[in-house]
Image (cartoon, rainbow, N blue to C red; front, side):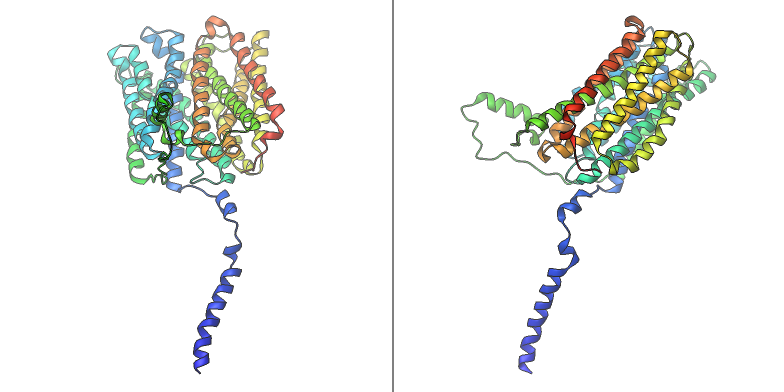
Length: 469
């Protein structure tokens, strides 16, 4: 009996050890579990809605920006600046917003909501004051909100909360909200223009000011929702090593202080990229730049070109509907892409999307050269351009998050977003001056840039292979 008393706990302990050893959980590869990790659903939903509202805010003024500017004494170049200036301001706000973020996402999201609401308010009251540059000031003030496009991409590829095989999927959701904004924004702008024109000659509410009032209200409501439900990712505080010696190196000290203004993460030691990784990074930066350059060109090109082009002669309402119908045609394809992207490598999507966009540019250039531009050809060109280059806009960062080391996450997001900003600003300005340089030159430059992107992709084909999903 005493032996039984002593043996029983021993046997029990041995069985427990055995059970633990053969437990199914013990055979699960932790790296495989991390590959399929996802962020909190409420926070992810807020980020996607924010991306949608940013796109709507950006596109809702496109049908009327040219006529709004002209009603206050502006030109087509000013209308192009109206479209592109929020992106330029966002580039300037990138450094302070990164510093404020503390390696998280909640603070810049709330600041962005308030900045967008204030910017829309200033845009709406420009007609009442009769001051043209208040339109530009309103768009400039909304710049901090535009910065969250970069934070959204980083949120969906952050290794702290998103697994390797879920980054392309979440990037596809961002592309989907981007396409939805491309569809909803111009349609709402055109509809509000029609409603505003029919409501009388009020300087407070008309076809030009209505988009500003609507978006201001939506941003304020969204700010309240974000304050209640958004849960930020757990931040990692990075401290400089006490052993680091910067004494006697004043230039090194100055560089460290300057870099720390951007983000503490930027001054931590990093692994040097291999030559193939550097080449892929350069290719993705070019793609990030030209994708937004082409989209920015068309965003300014459609309303300014279509109102005078033979065979089109579109009103602000009609050009807005054309924009919206293009987004409507692209949207179902992007929904299908959500399910196919999990089994498709990014390099295949890059090549196919590039070719689709190039075909759209070729159709438009050929119809312009032959003088046979009409609504159906113009619409088909816009659909192909919107589909191809929208697919490219987010996959650049998703691929780099798989190709580069984890500590390059912030750096690569900054580099890609800088390319996006440069492309969108210069593209909007380029599309706005098509009346001076010629429509053929405008589309020809888009085509040349897209061709260079495809040629840069081919020698890197084998290096761009990555896990799907």
